[in-house]
Image (cartoon, rainbow, N blue to C red; front, side):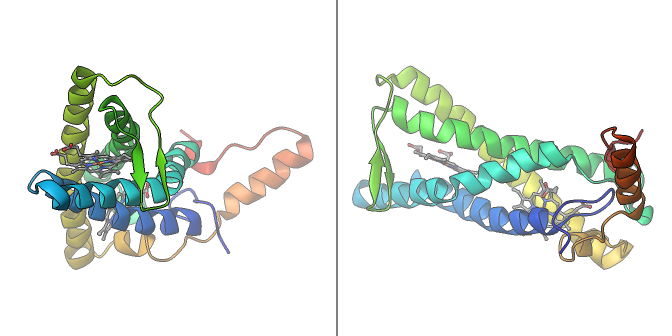
Length: 207
Ligand code: HEM
Ligand code: HEM
């Protein structure tokens, strides 16, 4: 089973992480946006739901961020080449960085607000910091702005994928559904370089 990404496609790991985290991020955006519209117990419940989902998925969300930078972004399929592919690639990296920003600012925001992070009714992660509401407010602004960036880019992203699937029919959508076959060139060069005792370079690292 092709687990890793290839020079121009995604492996199972990226595909699974993409879809799991896409659902989690969309739910967190929705619940997060609802928090400020509620008051009293309803607000507390929404906040608890938001932090509980975020912390439950925390490691998976980080894995998704780290893996994209470790594996790098796969190159284009033959029909995908061009300026729009490059714009899409930048947008993907911005999305990944924005998710990382949410994961850093979210917990810090709760802690600098002088609270512990509640996770379902399982546990409360206590704050290691003194409460500081100026810092909390600054973190809240970054959290909200980054959420807006994710929302706008996700809408463009879904619109872009729809355009590729409906009009271009260039294999973009299938890339995130069916894992790519392992690169024969890369695997052959890995074997050859292993024989020579020198480290292999990934095919998509080639200039
Ligand atoms: C990808 C992950 C996340 C997304 C997409 C997300 C999204 C959002 C959104 C859209 C808001 C509303 C912002 C506003 O006021 O306009 C929000 C608020 C909030 N988020 Fe997140 N969030 C994420 C991760 C986290 C994490 C990891 C935590 C902490 C464990 C967290 C804690 C909070 C809190 C406490 C608020 C409410 C702030 C307030 O109004 O008092 N978030 N989030
Ligand atoms: C729900 C509808 C979604 C669809 C149909 C969709 C579809 C796709 C497709 C087809 C690709 C491959 C594009 C290519 O490399 O040529 C892709 C990549 C990507 N998507 Fe989505 N996506 C969705 C939601 C999301 C969401 C909510 C996020 C994040 C907030 C996201 C973030 C990314 C990122 C960062 C990539 C680059 C590869 C990776 O790191 O996983 N997508 N998506």
